[in-house]
Length: 428
Image (cartoon, rainbow, N blue to C red; front, side, top):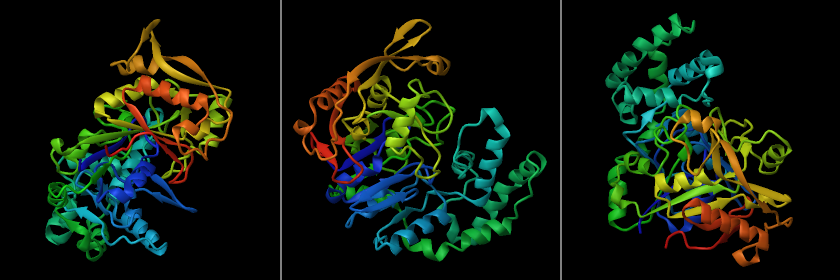
């Protein structure tokens, strides 16, 4: 069973990095196949906390080969800042592979992202302003800059000139910003050539050969199902495919090489940015979840929106991704609650709806229908078996499992890498 995909099953920030780290010693490759530095993974190793934004979290595990695949958009400044920070802390980063076909985020992508978002006013999407969307737009518009373009200065210059021809008119005439010089961009990109060259390879070929050897290859999705550009709450989504299908197109491996799909869900729900969120809380319960769960963005630091667990979203994620196993994280955040509501369905125009409405308008106006579960009022961070959890915690997990469309195989009971309860082996 060499091909495994890990995806977020809500709106992101579910704890995918921890799940990857949990499998780390048993896998050979960890592949980031979508997104950029617009999302972060926080991994706790002993007393050390690592916040990763662009790099796959497998880079923290000795012996694992980390890969940034073709579906990722790469900000070279961020890449080397992260690599230098890890090296300074004694982490070996020498095995990193970067796809020659990955697209680059440039200074003009970041500028356009920020001015466009401000221009939208009340209609803002809630982007991170890191140039992710504009870089993907250039990719689809066939004016993007790829990693391999760095190694031919003439081609690089031609492509930058072509990309800036229209963008500068837009910046000057619409947004009242200065034009960006071609030389400014080219010189900046060329400054990274010598450092990035040893990392660049045909990652699709290397991953194919790894799978042929029956190495364990883990594909680590950025963002999450509900932020997928095709299957999420469009337009309040990211600009790439964050679902399991994106692992094939974003890395160059065949779909039939994927053997397991692990969906990560929190014991409650969070999201950042704008868009529908049926179980969102605006009261003391929301303040409690945000404070206790430390729900602030790894990359941006901004407070996350919080709400109760949404079973229809979990079922949707299970169906869209083909989830074989769920990892339920942050169960310990609920330790002090007397009652824990779970959204089991929605009310739309006075009718009960069991699944996510196909209409975005209906989903936006959907009212959650809750079922209440008794809390356990007990610290569970020391639990390491399902049987050692309080009875009410066990009942809560079993109820979520019955509602969510796949088995819950691992339960996070604390932030540390060893603070987990394993019910089923994720690799079998």
